[in-house]
Every structure is written in structure tokens, then in C-alpha cells.
Amino acid sequence: MFLNLAKLILSFFDLLDRKKILSYFKRNIKGQLKCCIDVGAHHGQSIKSFNKVFKIEKLIAFEPSQKNFEILSEKNKHIKNLEIFNIGLGEKKEILNFKQHVESQSSTLIKINDESNYYKRKNFYLNFFNKNKIQFYNVKVKIDRLDNILNLLKIQYIDILKIDTEGYDFNVIKGLGEHIKNVKYIYFEHHFHNMLIKNYTLSNIHNYLEKKNFKKVFKIKMYFRKTFEYIYLNKSF
Image (cartoon, rainbow, N blue to C red; front, side):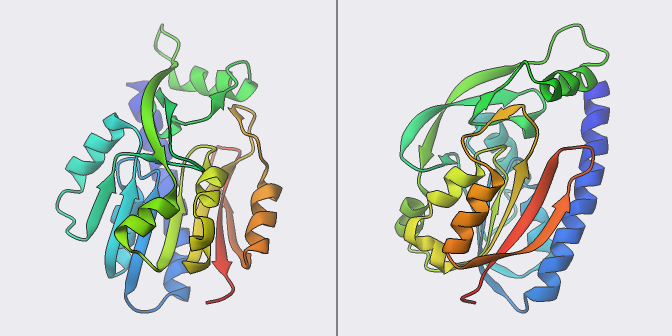
């Protein structure tokens, strides 16, 4: 019960952040959107928000977790402009261990530092009235590059690429390859806590995007977490 309450509280504050992000896009994007892509779609929270605010010709969502994918598909089966893929995205085509967490939004493709203070504190709060320690468990998932999918679907332009992959964001971005020049906005979150063992920093992402002609136009800190959300704009548009 406490876990459900904690998830409900976080969802409320995440909704406040999402409203601020949507407000930015509403101020800066006019008219119909051709294509929006949601990487790490979870249960479709962002899909629902964007589809409510904008008229979008095509929505594409990626969710590697079979468990999350089934919920995502069921909750959003009424959305006619949506296509969902049960795969993860990265730098190459491969099979990886996906670490599924009981609090499904914390699931990730990267290694977990279970000795970190952040991990212990998170498990304490999510497991407050339970005897069993909350743990990640591994499931095998398929990974592909985003540029492979875009070529397959013959997509030439993306208005918004949203990435929420719990520490795998840079891998997704690099998997765009040359298609990055056809993306107007890249919207992603970045974690600064020590629970996720990443092989890159925010500076690595920032420098990479700057070299690809992007500039940072939005930044917000998420409530109760050492996590920020960023929006980068392709200066070619």
C-alpha cells in the first residue's frame, strides 16, 4: 500500500513537471506535428499528454519491458496515430539484460550500484512497510538502433524525440546516427545520483549535441530526485 501511495505522490509531481514542459512546447511549436517519438514510453504518460495538446500525424513509442509494453498497449489501444515497439534502443543491435524494478519507472538497461546511498534510501522509502527488500530482476530484451527503425518506417523528420531510459539516454541519442539532423527537439532526463553506473556524463551529451548543431533551451529539476529534464533545439530549424 505504501508503494502505491509513493507512486501516486511522485506521479502528481511528475505531472506538474510535464505541464511545464508542455507549456514550453506549446509556446514554441505552432500547427500540426508530423512525428513524435517516445523512447521509454512506460505506460504512456507522455503519449497521452502530447496527444492531448497537439494534433500529431504519427506517434511512435518504444518500451523494452514486456510487462510495461502490455500495459502500454492496453491503455493506449484507442490512439489511432500510435505505433508501439516492444524493443529498447541503443548504439547497436543486441540482446541485453533489462533490470525490471517493482516500481516500474525505475527499471533500466544499465548496471545498478546497490551499495549507493541513493539506492538504499530509495528502497527504504518504497519498502517502508514491507519485510522483503525491493530488488531488480533481469529479463532479456531486444535492442536496436533508432536509425534502423527510422529507415524501416521511412521517417524523414521528427518534431520531438523524448527519451526517458533511466541512464541510457546517451546510447539512444548516438543510435540516431545521421538522422539526428532531422530531429527538431530532443527532450530527455539525466540522473546525477550514484545509483546508476553510467559511462558518460551530462557534459558528454551536451558536447555531442552542440557538435550536432543543437543548443540547450530548457532545464528543470524533478521533485525529490537528483534528476533534471532538458530540451535541446536543433538550430537548423
